[in-house]
Amino acid sequence: MSDTVLLIQVLRAPLTALALPPTGWDLLIRQARRANLIARLATELEAALDQVPSAPRQHLHSALLIARRQRIATRWEVSCLRDALAPLGLEPILLKGAAYLMADLPAARGRLFGDVDLLVPRRQIAAAEAALLEAGWAFDDELSAYDQRYYRDWMHEIPPLRHQERDAALDLHHTILPPTARRPVNTDALFEDTRGLADMPGMRMLAPTAMFLHSAAHLFHEGELDNGLRDLFDLDSLLRTFGAEPGFWAQLPTRARVLGLGQPLYLALRYTQRLLGTPVPAEVMDEARRLAEPRALRLLDACYERALRPAHPSCADGWTATARLALYVRSHWLRMPTGLLARHLLRKAWLRLRPEPVAT
Image (tube, rainbow, N blue to C red; front, side, top):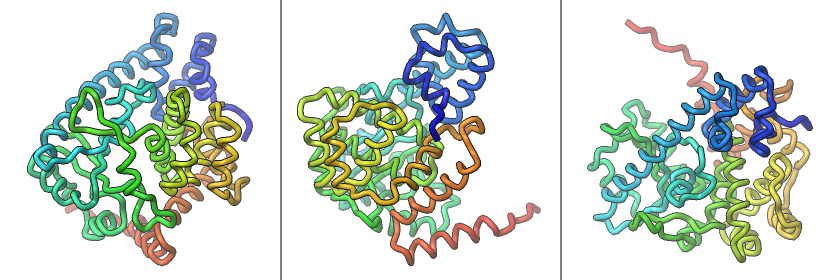
């Protein structure tokens, strides 16, 4: 697919939006909402908001207010999590959106997210879980025994938690990819590659190369890509930010090799460059390709260049649904060995086909 999505065009050159006709603004806002990039769009246009027509300006202003509220709420939530886990002597590692925000990275500007992600060593996961339950967090009452086993035996995190008073959502990880994954990550090396947060002592974040590689692994092992374009813009922003730091580009393939994340590194560099024009040194791209030894690239391109678009009819063609389904199956294939994958997908299919119980 060679035609460029309007939302991508505008986010790469925000002031071009000011020349849009009313129908263009309508399409832009709809695409941005479906991609969960409405607040990012609003942030990019904030300085010129008075030049935006009234109707889209209202949508953008509301998105700015939501992003500001989330920023305040997330900082408070992170401080509460720190206080809950501090008695254990833990310094949890913030991941993805909360980490970008707490580190005040450009990737956090206008980024909306639904939960806080924390990483702690597996040997301390049970103690951390107990401390969080004591502090008011709880699991979903409707979680089945199968779901409990799915998370605890096969996944890289325990079941999702939600605070009973603040309604905040939390994912507690012990690694960043499932232990059952075909290419498991070197988690020990990951924990050696962290930095403190200056204004939140007791909390940590991944170092730049590891932060980028985790975000790449998350996106390119993900099966449901409704936030895929948002996450691709995250990767673009991280590369542009960290790429200005001495040594980042030279260290990136090396860290990918150590962590076992050569394939997501290559795919992240490939699609940020192809879709967003991210500047990547040629020698880094060559080294990433050697690490990944990519196969079926034409097929992957056909799938990702459709799925990494807003889930809006204006961004789809006759193959988009097939591409999304293929990547959904691929994500599960990456997470699980064949036998386990077959059982899991058959169970999910059966649950979807099973008739809903009749209310009495």
